[in-house]
Length: 132
Image 1 (cartoon, rainbow, N blue to C red):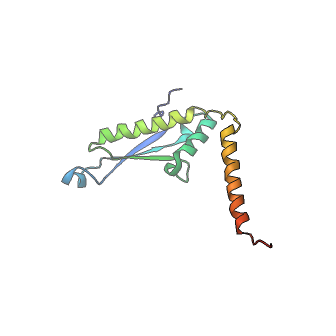
Image 2 (image 1 turned 60 degrees about the vertical axis):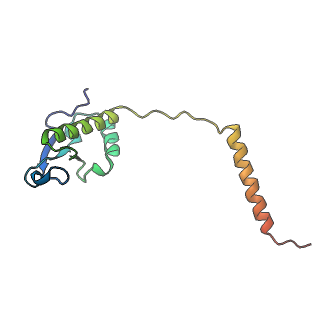
Image 3 (image 1 turned 120 degrees about the vertical axis):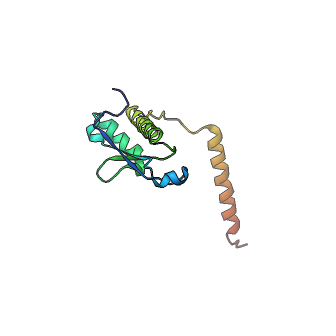
């Protein structure tokens, strides 16, 4: 399956943006608000779950993903930027996470841990009252 979103699984809306553009910024809607519908995307369920966790604050209560792009002064450049960001997000969701290889603590890390434990123990022992 291609990572690019299917037609019909997203909609684009253009809104006014701040930033660069001078007086033009008040007249032209250049910011792209891309709304992606994972349920209509045809992605496998496990990829949809990963996509929702990767989306973070871009995820709405309905389960849609909203991507805003306003880096550029033209609508077309912002549209391409938003679609590229969405494609990257989908690509990451399609790739299953690597399994962690279990490792044991190294000899040096064990020694450092024991050394700090000993130092902490000595500090606490020195605080105790001595009854000589």
